[in-house]
Image: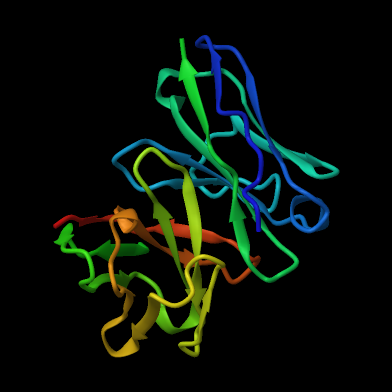
Length: 110
Length: 118
């Protein structure tokens, strides 16, 4: 199972909005509404911020939202804040009953 | 609250074995899968596989053979054993609780660094 495709990096200024894409195939992202997103600050444990495409766990800011169209899922962060800087990973369920991550995207808040 | 506490960093020689532990608390251990995720230096996250509520492991491609998942329900602990260690096994290994409501993962351990050097 190949890793899902994410941009290597994105950047934005405080207060702006950014979107991170996650492209797979009909065997994973496109076939199921089981896409999650994780925020990872190096040296700490990753944190679940979106599950089932567009749901936020309790305690996650509504500045984070998810969507999906076809084989591509997206994470949008509005009102960028310095603490949003870090790495973001998508994860999808696949038709071989496995999970697959995206390659990760480094978000820089300018 | 859900907590997964992993064992400390390990430094092993090539060819040796290592066992990483992941002690769970704050939930009923036997009702959830446990996943393992690897992050090699400078690389992204990689799903290694999981172990189900009956103790049956499932390994992702690339992790079959030298990697062994197990659980000891009496102490609410999951284990990852890596045999015949190679230099390229150097990574941070995370245990991650599986979700019951959908196929995914929610709570993460703090990670265990495994280094391999002669």
